[in-house]
Length: 185
Image (cartoon, rainbow, N blue to C red; front, top):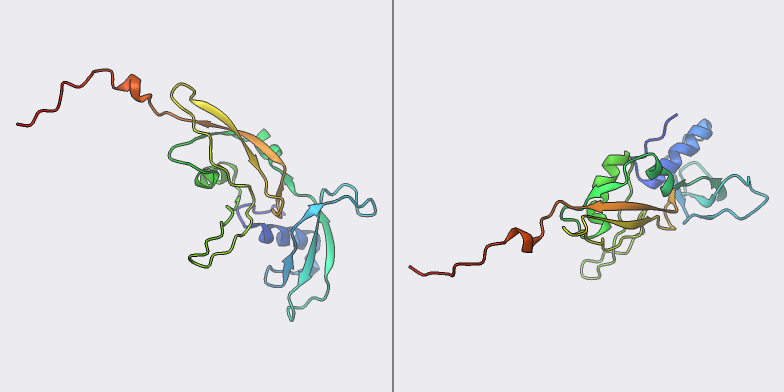
Protein backbone atom coordinates (compact mmCIF):
# COMPACT_ATOMS: atom_id res chain seq x y z
CA UNK A 1 0.00 0.00 0.00
CA UNK A 2 1.27 3.43 -0.91
CA UNK A 3 0.52 6.10 1.67
CA UNK A 4 -1.13 9.37 0.71
CA UNK A 5 1.17 12.05 2.10
CA UNK A 6 -1.25 14.80 1.07
CA UNK A 7 -3.24 13.88 4.20
CA UNK A 8 -2.66 15.38 7.64
CA UNK A 9 -0.19 13.67 9.98
CA UNK A 10 -2.67 11.69 12.13
CA UNK A 11 -4.34 10.31 8.99
CA UNK A 12 -0.99 9.26 7.48
CA UNK A 13 0.00 7.49 10.70
CA UNK A 14 -3.37 5.71 10.98
CA UNK A 15 -3.05 4.62 7.32
CA UNK A 16 0.41 3.18 8.08
CA UNK A 17 -0.87 1.35 11.17
CA UNK A 18 -3.76 -0.11 9.13
CA UNK A 19 -1.40 -1.13 6.30
CA UNK A 20 0.79 -3.00 8.80
CA UNK A 21 -2.19 -4.30 10.83
CA UNK A 22 -5.25 -4.70 8.56
CA UNK A 23 -7.37 -6.13 11.39
CA UNK A 24 -7.08 -2.81 13.25
CA UNK A 25 -9.43 -1.00 10.83
CA UNK A 26 -8.59 2.16 12.79
CA UNK A 27 -9.70 5.72 12.01
CA UNK A 28 -8.51 9.02 13.46
CA UNK A 29 -11.84 9.29 15.30
CA UNK A 30 -10.94 6.17 17.30
CA UNK A 31 -7.57 7.24 18.71
CA UNK A 32 -5.42 10.20 19.63
CA UNK A 33 -1.65 10.53 19.46
CA UNK A 34 0.80 12.08 21.89
CA UNK A 35 3.60 14.27 20.62
CA UNK A 36 6.22 11.91 19.20
CA UNK A 37 9.64 11.47 20.77
CA UNK A 38 12.98 10.07 19.65
CA UNK A 39 13.29 6.32 20.11
CA UNK A 40 16.14 5.76 22.56
CA UNK A 41 14.87 2.51 24.12
CA UNK A 42 17.07 -0.42 23.06
CA UNK A 43 14.26 -2.86 23.95
CA UNK A 44 12.11 -1.40 21.17
CA UNK A 45 12.95 -2.25 17.61
CA UNK A 46 16.17 -0.29 17.22
CA UNK A 47 15.53 0.51 13.57
CA UNK A 48 12.69 2.90 14.40
CA UNK A 49 13.52 6.59 14.92
CA UNK A 50 10.29 7.61 16.70
CA UNK A 51 7.88 6.51 19.41
CA UNK A 52 4.37 7.84 20.03
CA UNK A 53 1.70 6.95 22.55
CA UNK A 54 -1.64 5.97 21.03
CA UNK A 55 -4.65 6.51 23.27
CA UNK A 56 -8.05 5.10 22.33
CA UNK A 57 -11.10 7.35 22.35
CA UNK A 58 -13.63 6.05 24.85
CA UNK A 59 -16.37 3.97 23.24
CA UNK A 60 -14.66 3.64 19.86
CA UNK A 61 -13.75 -0.06 20.05
CA UNK A 62 -10.27 -0.04 21.57
CA UNK A 63 -8.79 -0.14 25.04
CA UNK A 64 -5.26 0.88 25.76
CA UNK A 65 -3.13 3.01 25.61
CA UNK A 66 0.00 1.70 23.89
CA UNK A 67 3.43 2.90 22.86
CA UNK A 68 4.02 2.59 19.12
CA UNK A 69 7.47 2.75 17.43
CA UNK A 70 7.73 3.86 13.79
CA UNK A 71 9.87 5.90 11.41
CA UNK A 72 9.20 9.54 10.68
CA UNK A 73 10.49 10.87 7.35
CA UNK A 74 13.62 13.01 7.44
CA UNK A 75 12.90 16.24 5.54
CA UNK A 76 16.40 16.15 4.00
CA UNK A 77 15.55 12.86 2.26
CA UNK A 78 12.52 14.47 0.57
CA UNK A 79 14.60 17.24 -0.94
CA UNK A 80 17.48 14.98 -1.99
CA UNK A 81 15.23 13.51 -4.67
CA UNK A 82 13.13 16.57 -5.47
CA UNK A 83 13.35 20.23 -6.31
CA UNK A 84 14.67 22.34 -3.46
CA UNK A 85 14.47 25.73 -5.21
CA UNK A 86 11.36 27.89 -4.92
CA UNK A 87 10.38 31.32 -6.23
CA UNK A 88 9.72 33.57 -3.26
CA UNK A 89 7.06 35.68 -5.01
CA UNK A 90 5.18 37.58 -2.31
CA UNK A 91 5.93 35.06 0.46
CA UNK A 92 7.11 36.61 3.71
CA UNK A 93 6.92 33.58 6.01
CA UNK A 94 7.46 29.89 5.40
CA UNK A 95 3.69 29.38 5.83
CA UNK A 96 3.19 31.67 2.81
CA UNK A 97 5.40 29.36 0.72
CA UNK A 98 4.22 26.00 2.02
CA UNK A 99 1.55 25.36 -0.65
CA UNK A 100 4.24 25.65 -3.34
CA UNK A 101 6.46 23.14 -1.46
CA UNK A 102 3.54 20.75 -0.83
CA UNK A 103 2.54 20.79 -4.51
CA UNK A 104 6.10 20.18 -5.69
CA UNK A 105 6.58 17.21 -3.34
CA UNK A 106 3.04 15.77 -3.26
CA UNK A 107 2.90 16.07 0.53
CA UNK A 108 0.99 18.08 3.14
CA UNK A 109 3.21 19.97 5.51
CA UNK A 110 0.72 21.63 7.85
CA UNK A 111 1.38 25.20 8.97
CA UNK A 112 1.44 25.88 12.70
CA UNK A 113 -1.36 28.00 14.15
CA UNK A 114 -0.21 30.95 16.23
CA UNK A 115 -2.25 31.73 19.33
CA UNK A 116 -4.57 34.70 18.91
CA UNK A 117 -6.36 35.61 22.15
CA UNK A 118 -8.56 38.13 20.32
CA UNK A 119 -10.47 35.34 18.60
CA UNK A 120 -9.79 32.51 21.06
CA UNK A 121 -7.43 30.61 18.72
CA UNK A 122 -5.01 28.36 20.55
CA UNK A 123 -1.52 27.65 19.31
CA UNK A 124 -1.31 24.35 17.46
CA UNK A 125 1.94 22.78 16.32
CA UNK A 126 2.30 22.11 12.63
CA UNK A 127 4.75 19.97 10.70
CA UNK A 128 7.42 22.67 10.53
CA UNK A 129 8.73 25.62 12.48
CA UNK A 130 7.48 28.79 10.78
CA UNK A 131 10.09 31.45 10.08
CA UNK A 132 10.32 34.81 8.38
CA UNK A 133 11.92 34.00 5.05
CA UNK A 134 15.17 35.63 4.03
CA UNK A 135 14.43 37.73 0.97
CA UNK A 136 16.49 37.30 -2.18
CA UNK A 137 17.31 40.53 -4.02
CA UNK A 138 18.23 41.48 -7.57
CA UNK A 139 21.87 41.59 -6.46
CA UNK A 140 21.58 38.22 -4.69
CA UNK A 141 18.77 36.45 -6.62
CA UNK A 142 19.04 33.16 -4.70
CA UNK A 143 19.41 32.61 -0.98
CA UNK A 144 19.31 29.51 1.23
CA UNK A 145 17.18 28.93 4.30
CA UNK A 146 16.51 25.95 6.59
CA UNK A 147 13.15 24.17 6.73
CA UNK A 148 12.98 22.44 10.14
CA UNK A 149 10.40 19.86 11.15
CA UNK A 150 8.46 20.70 14.28
CA UNK A 151 9.32 18.16 17.00
CA UNK A 152 5.55 17.56 17.41
CA UNK A 153 5.10 16.49 13.76
CA UNK A 154 3.83 12.91 13.55
CA UNK A 155 5.23 12.41 10.04
CA UNK A 156 8.40 14.49 9.60
CA UNK A 157 11.71 14.98 11.41
CA UNK A 158 15.00 16.74 10.75
CA UNK A 159 15.61 19.65 8.42
CA UNK A 160 16.45 20.52 4.83
CA UNK A 161 18.23 23.41 3.18
CA UNK A 162 16.07 25.07 0.53
CA UNK A 163 16.81 27.87 -1.90
CA UNK A 164 14.62 30.89 -2.56
CA UNK A 165 14.88 32.75 -5.84
CA UNK A 166 13.43 35.98 -7.15
CA UNK A 167 12.88 37.58 -10.52
CA UNK A 168 12.36 40.99 -8.92
CA UNK A 169 14.21 43.84 -10.54
CA UNK A 170 16.59 46.17 -8.76
CA UNK A 171 14.64 49.40 -8.35
CA UNK A 172 17.65 51.71 -8.76
CA UNK A 173 18.74 49.91 -11.93
CA UNK A 174 15.21 49.98 -13.34
CA UNK A 175 14.58 53.70 -12.80
CA UNK A 176 17.62 55.03 -14.58
CA UNK A 177 16.14 58.32 -15.82
CA UNK A 178 15.75 61.11 -13.28
CA UNK A 179 12.41 62.84 -13.02
CA UNK A 180 11.79 65.80 -15.24
CA UNK A 181 9.68 67.25 -12.45
CA UNK A 182 6.01 67.20 -11.60
CA UNK A 183 4.04 69.77 -13.55
CA UNK A 184 0.53 70.91 -12.78
CA UNK A 185 -1.23 71.98 -15.93
